Length: 184
Image 1 (cartoon, one colour):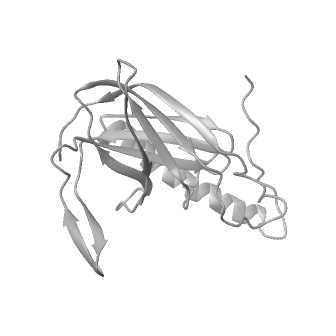
Image 2 (image 1 turned 135 degrees about the vertical axis):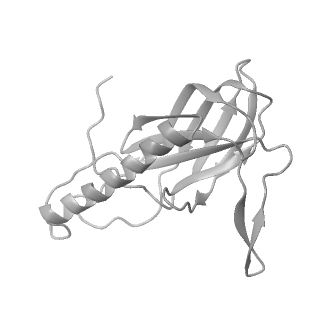
Image 3 (image 1 turned 90 degrees about the vertical axis):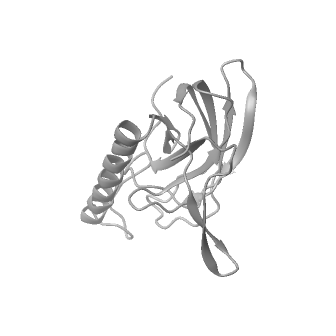
């Protein structure tokens, strides 16, 4: 199957070539941070091209985080059974910038081909790497399959030349994902 055509990156009334280069520089910085997460911090990570997107994953031990409750941030440790944290990053296939405002669903399948759950992953603020993610409960250490679905977003897109992108939903499957359960 041929590699899909990249989304357009042409000078237009909305973006000069210099401005498009700035977008590419933002994407390069994001990609560098993402590769560090996937290769240096996480237990496993990888990525695949899918339509106008590049979909990446990282898996690490379950972790605590703040949640807004009644107008205040409250810290929550992982639930007792949660033993891994699955992160999904979705980037533009032309400039590598993170794409916010997406609906991202993940299904985890174990090595016996048994589905261990499907969840929508919310956007998560992270000190150095925006992503979609959540804690999960898996039965034990091993290799899993992650089935990732990204819906076509309903947000507006500037630019008649460059804005025609993200019009189709995509599905990506990562096999042989190594998960080492635990909590940070």
